[in-house]
Length: 271
Ligand SMILES: [Fe+2]
Ligand SMILES: [Fe+2]
Image (cartoon, rainbow, N blue to C red):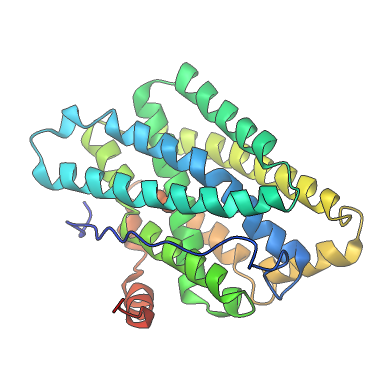
C-alpha cells in the first residue's frame, strides 16, 4: 500500500512554442528527438490511464483515500496531457507528422480497450506508469540528463518527472484493491513492454528520418552514448524495471523522496 495519501495538483503552464529552439537539447539532435518521441505518447496515453482508473471508481467507493488519489492522479495527468499537447503542437509546427503519430498511439490504446477486460487495462496502466515513474526517477536523480536542455524544456520534463513519482503507486494500488494478481500483471507488463518499446523505436526512426539522420552513424552513436553511457540511465532503467517481477513488488519500494524534495526546493514560488 502506498504511503502517499494526497497529491498536489500544480496547474503549471510552460511556454513551449516558437521561442524554443527546434533542437533544444544540447546533447544532440537525436537526443532531442528521443524526448520529443516520448512526448508523442503522453496526451493519448495519459487519457487512457485516466479512463482506466475512473472505470474502477465505484469499486473503491468505500475508500475515501483511494478515491481522492484517483482524483489527484487524473488532475495531474490531465494537466500533463494539456502541456504535452502544446509541446506536440510545437513539433507539428516544426513539420513532424504528429497527427499521424498520435493517431497510431490512439489506435493501439483503442484496440486495448476493445479487446482487454477492464482489469487488464488497469494492469497495462500500472505497467506503463512503472516506466514513467522510473524514467522520471532517473531524470530527477541525475541532473546531467537535462543539463544541456533549454530551460523551459528542462522545467517541463522535471515537473512531469516529479509528479509521475508522486502518483506512481495509484494505478498499482487500485489494481491490487480490485483483485489484481501477480501472474496477470507480469504477463501484461511483458506485452506492454514489447508494444511500447517497439513503438518508441519506430517513432525514433521516423523522427530521425525526417531530420535526415536515420542513416547517420554519428546521430545513433550520440543517442546510444547518451542513453547507455554518459550520462546513461538505460541500464539502470531496465534493472529497476525488472523489480516489477518480484511477487511482493510495490512502486514505493524505490524511494524517490530525496530526489522529489530536491526538485521541490528548486521550485520558485509564484509571486
Ligand atoms: Fe503524466
Ligand atoms: Fe502518470
